Length: 145
Figure 1 (spheres, helix red, strand yellow):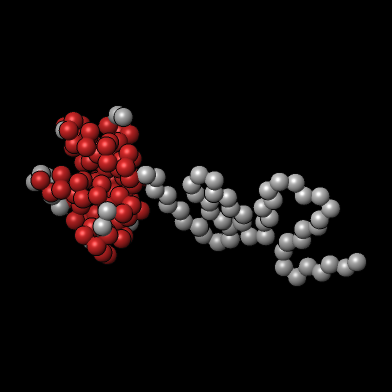
Figure 2 (figure 1 turned 30 degrees about the vertical axis):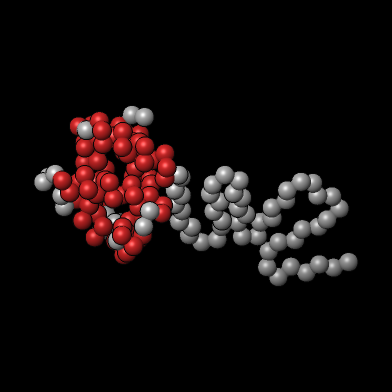
């Protein structure tokens, strides 16, 4: 895996965790959902004077595009300068699994992961065949015979 891909994968895994990490801390979050990945990255950032405060500021402002960009820039720089760190994160990424994030506004549905299915408001999911049936969706419908 190349450095930009590792950096992007690390960010994809930890970005949804930032609010939880800020609220609970990695100790209370445990090893679930990439917390171990965050711990390794955070320790690496804290070892260098020029990156020491970045993870702290990112946790203080997890929604800040400026802090997210700063973190991603420095993560990629650290990976480029330390092949062992890149290898360590690549190994950890293989154990973390896939992290999904979604934000639904209004009516609709979100499906994530293998085999997931979603149907939005008023929708109908039919698996297999359907013969001789009537489907009515919406509000205030009257069915007359």
